[in-house]
Amino acid sequence: MPGRLNKGEAAHKLKRAVFFHERGEIRDRSFESQAFRASGLNLVVSSIVHWNTVYIERAVSHLRKMHREIPDHLLKHVSPLSWEHINLTGIYTWDAEHQMPEGFRSLRLPARLRHAA
Image (cartoon, rainbow, N blue to C red; front, side, top):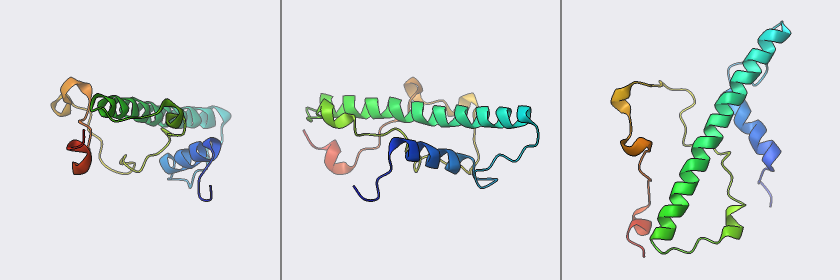
């Protein structure tokens, strides 16, 4: 498919989006600093992939509870490597006031899906 990235290219593109400050380049002089920065980048990218995987599973479970057919063989084509819905350049809050009920944000469903089933 034209315009579609393979998994390796998609992962690299996500890393570049997260590590935009130096245009995706690690410029530290010492090997220790380079390894530290690369480890931090991998941690953030892994967190994004985990977050997306959890929400994809929640969305699929919700749709299946609504008696929507979601074939398992199609799910292998769904990638948790997207980040367009994640604010990579904003203000981040981690305090308890902003905790989500049951630890999750609610699923955002288009109106036509809310009323389907």
